[in-house]
Image (spheres, rainbow over the protein chains, first blue to last red):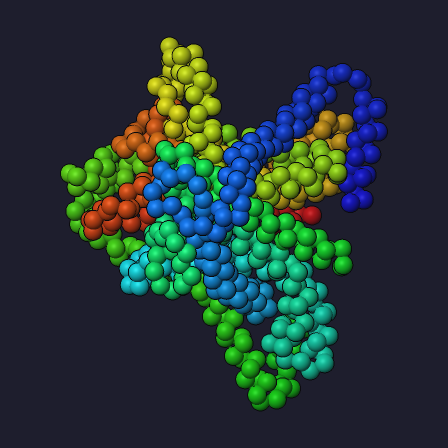
Length: 302
Length: 322
């Protein structure tokens, strides 16, 4: 931070010494302005997308409040009116189950990478492949689960949850390892010095002190997973009534409903799509915001 | 690290605690190995389902332009082109903007502006792709009609631009490319930021002390340090853009067999075709669609492997130089 200040003040002094309005200075100013412009340009789509979602979604959601969140999805898609209840339940159950699978595995995987593996060949390989795995297209994960799970057990919420878990796993691993790296080594040594075993040290000293960072990383992963559509298309099927059992029977989720309704030409269906989009964006933002609050509260405490 | 390992070897634990220790160690190794298992299983189980289509089409699967299920012709060439074409359009828009933002945030912006910019990127990154797609097809595609017509009529008689801006359609490669660019900008920007931040402060100050303007400092001190990392960042963006499914499926227009340079033409990409045709697919077609997915998987894995190693090497090298 202090070097940053000195950088700026040197720049200032130099700017005072330099002959004014030289071509070089003008070119530099133009480039800096272009950079500022780039930063402005990216705000535009954000504002437009969120603006559309709110302006078109809020009307739908609040006209039928709260039945939009609770009613069944109309069987005929040309019907106007609520609701999205089954999709909201489905999203919560499927994302929740995916979290239950991916987070413990991801944290344990990261524990292996940082606490046991370190710089061994195997852990280097796993770390590298986990990074590569974050780039596997979500549709490939969906088809993968279709091939190994859905073909055998049929359409159900669990299939979708497993696909989402596969997408979350590398993200959780990367985020958790990043946080374990921040835990000071002398904490571990102090624990060993008291005669504590390595596993107890990890469970009672290392993980708790990295917990806020891990929680915030996992919340971000959940926020991303809740919005995934492609993995669900082949695995959960379609339902119009609440399906509370994710292990059996076709299910539905908000992203799948948005996709269906965005393709539809009926105004009623499109309306439901915007309402669902507002709900989904709201959920995703809520998780992101919580993640930020957790991590900044943690940073302040340190 | 070494003390830790040393302490680890001390046999001062009681029997049961030692057993618990070992068990925990194995559990965590197992969790780490799951990454390998999943990637291996994806490759194996999916590749083994592509048998029917490759027996039927042979290697022509990759060189055939047509995708005509009624005639049982399954060719991925136009789909691969569509995937690459939309991704290139997206990068064409996204790369300059991302580098601009990353430079702005790391080199130019006052401290109070940095955090809001990071929030903007966070929000963009967390908006689901299906929402971008819906916005693209229901809002953007309708409002951009005029611009497309103007592009077409203005450049119609020009030599190269005339074929790039051919007959316009609102759902097209360009519409999909624009939406994709919004989605990959946060990814490229955050990597580019990380790369730019590895420039040693001393070199930036040295450049300024020699009388360099801010832009000359960026060109002379920041860019040479970041070249490799930027290449990797762009490649990661390419991988993401090629694998993106839903936003593209909604905006690309789903026209088959398009091998064209016309950005305003409707087309199809590998992932969007899979979502569109999965529903009514018979066994051979399903096998063909899975073969498309495997092709996509292999391409994105190759891109990601190269990109990840380029980025890691470049960050490591510049950290080592400090």
